[in-house]
Length: 286
Image (cartoon, rainbow, N blue to C red; front, top):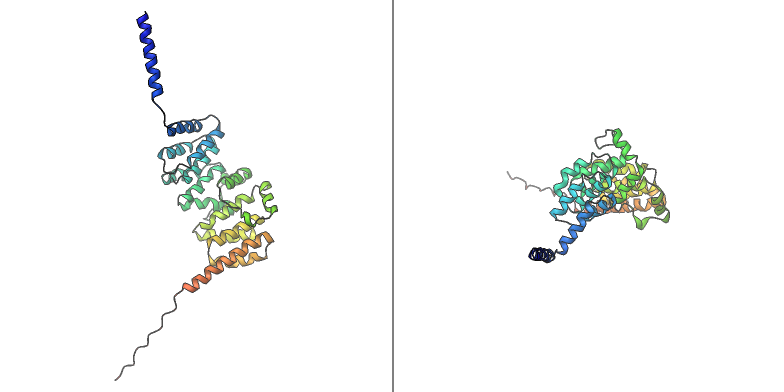
C-alpha cells in the first residue's frame, strides 16, 4: 500500500515538474491573452481585441483571426475586423471585403475604406454613394441602401471610426468643433468628400464640385473644397473660385483650392514643351 502511494506521489511530482518546466514565451502568453479577447462573450471586448490585430502587419495568424472576425454576429466586431485587415495590408482579404459591401449595417462599410487602403478603387463607390445619394452609374440606391444611409448615428460612427481625418482642425472655428458634437450627418458627408479626393474616376471630381456649391452644411462644403485641392484637377478651379464668395469658414478652404490649382496650372504651362520650329528647306536651284 505504501509503495503504491509512493509511486503515485512520485508520478504527481514528476507531472508538476514537467508542467512548470515548459515555460511559455512572452509572445505565446500574449497570444493566449489576445485569443481570450477574440472569443470573449462580451462583444465590446471582442471589438478591442480585433482592433489590435490591425497593428500586426505581416502576421499570418493575425490575418486569419481578422478574417474569422468578419463572420462575427455583432456588426461592430465585423467593422473592426474590416478595418484591421486594411490596416495590416492584407490584400488577400479583398474578396471578403468586397462581399462585406453588401452588408446591411452601415458600420461594416468600413470595408470600403480598407479596400481603398489596399489599393482597390472599388471602395470609392461606397463613399460616392454616401456623398451623392446615388451610384456612379446614375441609378438610385435600393431601399435597403437608403435605409442604411439614413441611420444617422451609425453613419456618423462610420466617419469617425474610419480615421479619415476629415476635419481640417487648423481652419475650423470653435463653432465648427461644436457642430461635430451635435450633427450626425455633416461629419460623415465630409469624410466621404475627403475620401473621394484620391478617386481617379472623373465622376468623383464632378460630385465634389457639386457638393462644394450645393451642400447645405458648411462643414461639408469646406471638406469638398479641401478634397478638390488635394485632387489637384485644374478643371475644378472655376468651382473653387465660386467658393470664395461663401461664408468665412468655407472661404479659407476654397482659397486653398484656388491657390493649389493655380500652381498646378502654372507648373503645367512651364513644363509644356515649346512648339517645334518649322524647318525651312533650302531653295532648290535649277
